[in-house]
Length: 383
Image (cartoon, rainbow, N blue to C red; front, side, top):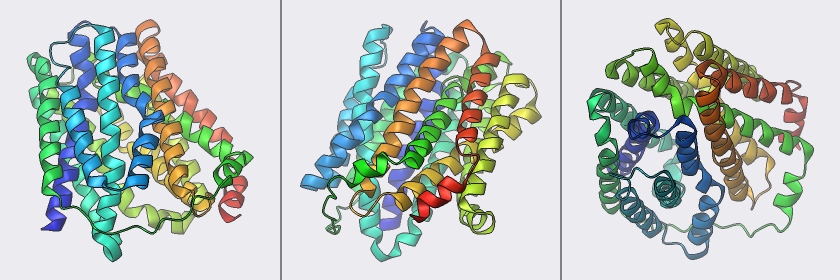
């Protein structure tokens, strides 16, 4: 029963992302937002990742009551997202998105801790629980493709409200954990010393560039498909294909690391990421190219995400890993997401789809060149 309750929460939480990521851009376009405005609105969703995880994480570490924080985040997110339907003013929508994302970023980090507390010594079962989040995303994308492409696009924000209600209800179905995590004393100055290391700076710049490269994809992929007359069903399946590839990759990544090495797998993934963006730049009208590009989501996103989490865990000293992971999220998904979304909006509007994805390929190329000589990565993780 506990497994079911935890899995249900992940299912409904990520189902909302399956509605926001593919279908919010078409909705914004339908109410008259320009590509640049869409970029700024999606950037607002990432902007709070620069500070919100740290604020909520500090509250959780300092006072506990993590499940209460999850519920407050869900409640605040519900009230915030209820402000979106019917809004057509850019500034008002931007403020709504900023407020909503602040509460949204309270939920998952704290719930991850709750899940691990519940699992305790069975932490190897985490993957089985977390898998249901990906299932929720896929089902939401497939349903959204049928419901929200075309005339149904006006209903998109109402689906966000329904999803937030389900997230709030699911948070009350999950029991609180009484486990107390052993908290290492904060290691004063250790995180600053680690962040000043050249190899760590280099790695975080790479993470920033990779997440920035995903700006044209996260914000404008559905619009790209619509431009080439793909229907809702095809759009839903193409989005789902990327997540399915991600699930499979997570299941075999440890084997790839063991066989080829951490550094070599990361370099290969960056090279494949460049190929992915080039396919979207030059062959978006070819279904076979789109299928290959979505399968490469496993490389361009999943490998880099997992590699970043592992690198931080290896490099940051005991007592500072949590802050290291927060920096990883803030610099990558936060700053990289903001810059990528805004840049994609300008490129999409002024220079066209091809240049937007060439920008993504260029950012990935610079990221690859930063870590091409992998010796510094190996040295950093072993020191």
